[in-house]
Length: 170
Image (tube, rainbow, N blue to C red):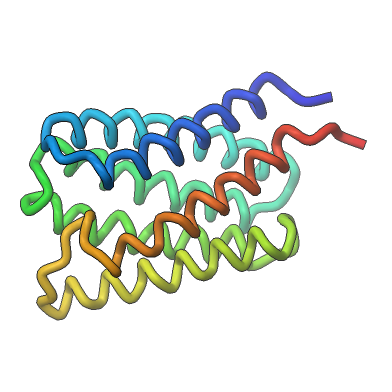
């Protein structure tokens, strides 16, 4: 039987994935900041619940990965109101922590292989984006191809996590 907390975590991931992707296509700064704030809150709630779930299950590395991801998302949330250009420092820190968290969650066979692979691809793309920002490339959170190409892999990972949370326990 699925727990209420699993359902809430799945909803948080769904909100995060949908609003996060939507925000990359919004032209209005105020609307993008609002959409990304909703996205960030959903992800923070989901990551907090997933941290607790996997820690209770004794899977400390996965739990620590979700906690690290939560820390990264918190940095992203902090930069939202500053606008795209001013948010770059917190953005770089946030996606660096996303990459670390995704790698930690995927290091063990807790999730299906395809989910772990999409997470690792996203982590690699975010790591390259961070390095480019640190080395002076003028990347914004909406820049293409990097970091934008990492978002679909992140959302695919979220879909896998949602599926895992919502499938019936056997």
